[in-house]
Length: 343
Ligand code: TXA
Ligand code: MG
Image (cartoon, rainbow, N blue to C red; front, side, top):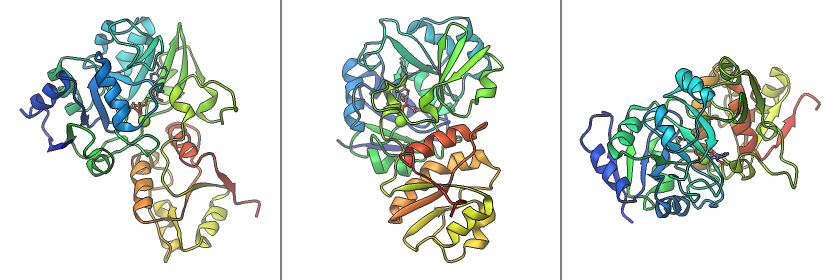
């Protein structure tokens, strides 16, 4: 398959109509969102949903997120409720996905066979313009090959998807860099299935109660069923093993100073001068979690391009946006945490 690659910065660009036409006839279009790039197809079309799984090399029991142009469009595809609209009022359009009971307008193939669906209304102007032009719900997982880090810029999309999709819209770098927060609504209770830029504290401004699904920070037990099928797969992973360093500031810095030459270090900006001669990928200032979130996936891909044999990074905090970073990094590291203070 030949993939058409279009650089589009203006949501009114006429060529968005060409992308919409591809979607209407069941094709695949990669488009930018404020979180990560999405691999889109018509959510109502079974064959198109199956084409997404094929392009990603993804197991088809892992359900897809349905992207809508307006929060109230969820009505067409899911059973909504008061709390959905409360969340929508505060966080949509934006990086929040809500799990609701599925209506039959969305085939089970799109929903990984579940009786619920995930709804998201992205804020990226090009994503919004594309959904509106296509006039259909767009099913879109992150536009990476299954298991790889999600792409946050067009080069990373092209590396995984060139030749596998009809079109790639290059809309520059994604603002947030980590996938949306996923919350499942059960009456007035929210269950956080995947942390993202909409934090637990932010959700608690709207929902009386938010429980964090155990798999968000813990390891799933051998025969435990995840609430979100996506949680059971090895995820976001670079080719080289990633090891997360836990311990006091100085102990971690000292470990990095003594790390072998074949390693790549995801360090804080403040540490650059203390790590001269090492192979570094700085991810932002220690307290700038937003910058670190934006840098994470592209840094993991860059470490592979640099042929790292092992990657070391700081174990992030678990509060605020830290929880999203922690969750992604724990999976990318296959739960490998090294405590360096004890040595
Ligand atoms: O930011 C995002 O959400 C990006 C952009 C493209 O919108 N999309 C994204 O999609 O991250 P994907 O497919 O990579 O991740 C979707 C996650 C998976 O872990 C899947 O298991 C979960 O959402 N999911 C989808 N439908 C679900 C459902 N009905 N119940 C529970 N989890 C669901
Ligand atoms: Mg994904």
